[in-house]
Image (tube, rainbow, N blue to C red; front, side):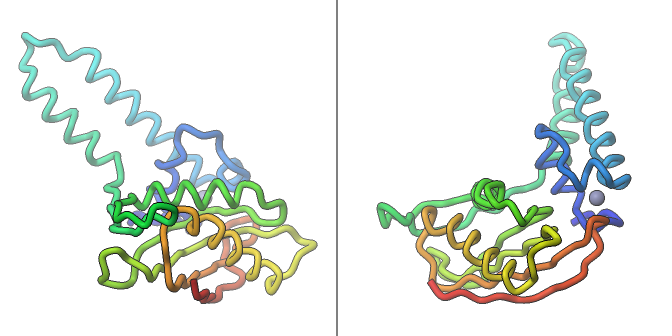
Length: 191
Ligand SMILES: [Zn+2]
C-alpha cells in the first residue's frame, strides 16, 4: 500500500475521490496533491475512452486503457462470511465492510474516522475473526478511554448486521489534527 507522508494511503484517497474532501484532506498537502493526481488520471482515461474509435487500433487502445484503469482501482478482496440475518454463506468485499463502518462512524460527533481497513484473521469459511484498523481524530473534550469504548461500539454496530462473528480486534490509532499519531492501542471484543 502506498502510504502518504501524513499516514493516509493513496488507496484511501482514491476510494473517497467522488466524495467531498474531509477535514483532514482539506488541510493536508499530501492528500490534496494525491487527490489532484488521481483526478488528473481519471480525466486522462476519460479522454482516452472518448478519443478511441473502432477503426483506430481499438484493441491496443482498450488494452492500454484497461491497464491504466486496473492500476487505479484498488483490488478488493472478497471474504466468505455468514449472513447475520439469513445465516446463509455469502461473500462481502473489503469495500462493502469499510463502507458500512464509515456510515456508522459518520454519525459520531466526537470521532472522525480518517482511515479504516478490515481483514479476516482466521482461515475459516465463513470467517469469524476479524482485525479492523482505525485511524481517527477525536474531539478535544473527550478522552482516549471514552473513545476506545465508542470505537468498539461503532465497529460492532457496523459489522453485526452484516455477518456473524466471534472476535474482532481493533487496532486504534488516534491522530492529531495534522495526522500525527498521538495514541495507539489494541482493543478486543468477543461476539
Ligand atoms: Zn493527508
